Image 1 (cartoon, rainbow, N blue to C red):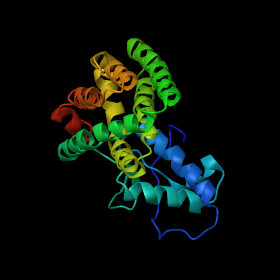
Image 2: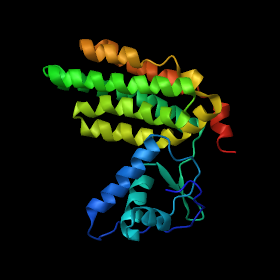
Image 3: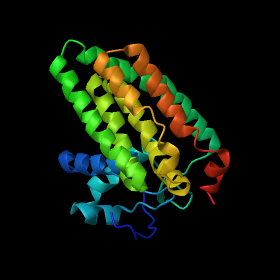
Length: 240
């Protein structure tokens, strides 16, 4: 989607009956990935017309993808019937933090159970996490906020998707959809230097040694480290 996209009013209509679910899923998956990785800014308008043009599809798949993202809170419908990237409030941020602390350690433990008797799968996951973390550290040191945001989400979901726990995964994805764009904005203001003390290496070590208690604690500590860099003032400033 073009960065210079202007606000455009759209109508949300009932779920489309048009055939072409594969195209709708492609549009939805791409938008979802962009939101989780913080590639779209809070408050930015999302237009059916622009989205359809970007993917060379009719309005129906674009509208259906938007409808689904409104339903999970990643997009919001304004009083003027515009669809925007969801804004953040202190209350919403606290709820997201508590939900992440409850769900993500459990999901990581499911991953350990899934790979415990599969040494090749465990080794592949460790290598994947190590490779992402190297690139993530480089992004932090060069101050590349956009690369950091994407690599950080890549790291977490490389871990979580191995769990085979689809219900938990969808819940965690819905949380990242809501805070991903906002986190990218805040990190852009604070700079990436505040992120050097993440718990990724502890997470990797716990996966390698199949230490569930250590993994859950490292995931919790990583969530708290990331979300405690955000003050209530920054949440409120983002709405200005």
